[in-house]
Amino acid sequence: MTAVTPPATERLGDAYFQDPQGLFSRLRASTPVTPVITADGGRAWFVTRYEDVRAALSDPRFAKDWAKHMTPEDWTPPDQEAGGFLNRHMLNLDPPDHTRLRRLVVKAFTPRRVAELRPRIAEITDRLLDAMAGSGTETVDLLEEFAFPLPVIVICELLGIPAEDRDSFRAWSSTILSSAETPEAFREAGAAMYAYFVQLIAAKREAPADDLVSALITARDEGDSLSEAELHAMLFLLLVAGHETTVNLIANGTLALLQHPAELRRLRSDLSLLPSAVEELLRYANPLNHATERFTLEPVEIGGVTIPAREWVILVTSSANRDPERFTEASALDVGRDAGGHVAFGHGIHYCLGAPLARLEGEVAIGALLKRFPGLALAAPESSLRWRPSSLIHGLESLPVRLR
Image (tube, rainbow, N blue to C red):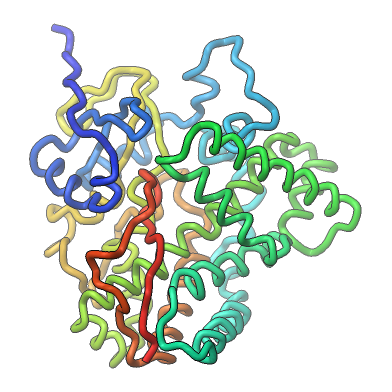
């Protein structure tokens, strides 16, 4: 008997963006593997339970290279549009291409190399906190003044990109990752970022420095390890992924602590809990709603449901992290919890290579923020806070706080 694909009844719109956990909780309990209608009107399958999500994250039947498997044989990407080069990065590739590209950058993000960045991250953090303290106002947008600039400055210095261009990065990244922008706006942002990278690469070729962009250019020009298009896509991935997750970890994590004053007091009184608190904030306040999309190469049974071949699949990591079958009192924040096993950074070969950097930045930033401003509090009703209209990104549009 041929399996019948159920209709998609859930549509991902503003209600989903503002309260994704409400939908995830309902789906975990009723239809943990089910098709949904995406914000652009397409269809994808949501997988929401921890056991299924973790298994699928390392299952090669859920593939990534859509250009190879999900496009017509005569399809060619447009050279200077977002769909042509931005999406050809290693997160959208399978082995051996994924393995080859990841090998080029993984050494820059090892725990040992990242640990060497701690003094510089602390220095940037202190400078930003000094500016907030000396601003002459008790109320600031923590996202604008702290959570955003810190990781952007760090990743720009690591890559060798001028940090003064960060407002442009923010605008392009926000548009590309938005589920509410028009295709025209998406293409314009992609084209602008492409043009920026063309100029950056030309400048670095002319005057290379001790940074990751220069190293990647050398790999391109001397080792033939990646194509020019892959070089552009790699820069896009490193720049965007290198700050988006950490921005939202700092902002979402701070909001979660302010919403749970007992846990905030507990952490303030014992800052040795910071490492476990960061893991718990990653689990509880998820910077991403889900992993990047995959598709089935063949019919795949998961969670007792068969997903047909050539179907898009969204593995909902933030739902998995709130699964009560995996985490006791999963809907509660517990800064002393052993949150090991959470999938905020994914699992398997696509596990986030920037995870050590995000953890370190989160630990330094949140710890310094709590020590500098013991009276930190929300400066707006929780009901007024808005989340970005993005299926992938779980991030605030702003976070007004009182410093004292």
